[in-house]
Image (cartoon, rainbow over all chains, first blue to last red; front, side, top):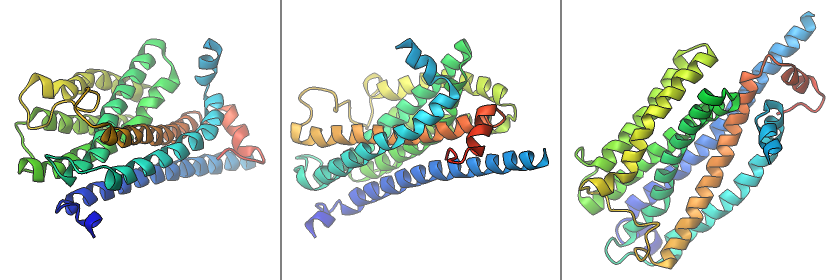
Length: 53
Length: 248
């Protein structure tokens, strides 16, 4: 409980660490999701072009 | 050495190398952050003046450091792209901007939350460090808006490189604001001798290196996507996509 209370600064300390975790995880997830999306789009375009030819 | 840099600037070579590089940056980064956060939250003693609120330093300082570092990368990338017309250099700026904006946002919010119990206010408009950091966030937004408003990649690269170079002035102001003007924000402590106990400093360095490695992993991942998109009409991308193993 002492670790959670952080000498009455718990709300400030934990909100900072929590927000940092959320932003870093979201940034990493977005980087990966964007790569998958761009790759898939290019793959569809190239394969459609190959079939057309 | 030069051969290595020359190869690195080659998009297909970089694309393949980046896939290998990402886990080598991310795994030690996560481990260092886990150690730094645990030690910073539970092992290090409370500060004699700020009590446990000082522990916010372990997320605030790495975020603030990366907010400036990302902008410097954008500016250096823009400069190299303008002078030597290196395509990969412009792509670095495009990949670094969203990450820089995220860390600037974190630096501002964690700084504001730390400021409330220490200074008695969430925000002070007259404070040079806070205001210049907010301007840095707007510079990131402006950079990203400028890039997305121009369809021609070459023109977007040039315009955004100029904006990045002009905005460097603000990074210098952010860094030296606490020395040049009177500020609510404390002066430089991390790299100054005698300002921080070694027990407090070691987890902070672990967090700084860990955050930098995670930033590096995310930057390389974004840069890989940027390279793929820019090179989508080239033969090597066609061969990569049509190869049985693919290149995800």
